[in-house]
Length: 78
Figure 1 (tube, one colour):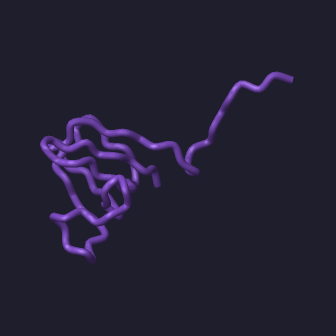
Figure 2 (cartoon, rainbow, N blue to C red):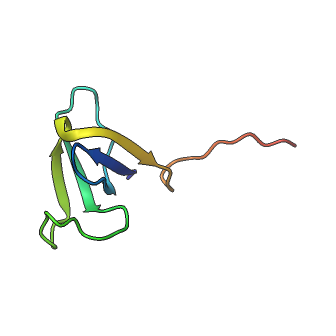
C-alpha cells in the first residue's frame, strides 16, 4: 500500500495510504489513515475517520513516497 502526499487546492497537504495509484480517468481517490504531514489529525475530519474519498478535481498533484512496498533496484559495482 503506497504512502502518498496529496497536495490539495487551497488546503494543507494530506498524507495517507492508497490501494493503487489513480488512473487517468479516475474522478475520486480513496485515502486510508488521512493525516497532516506531521502526523496530526486533519482539523476538518472527525477523529475516528479511517478512510476519506477526495475528488481528483481538488488535487493539485500527488507525491508518492518511497516505502517497503517497492523493490529498490540500484547500480552495484562489483
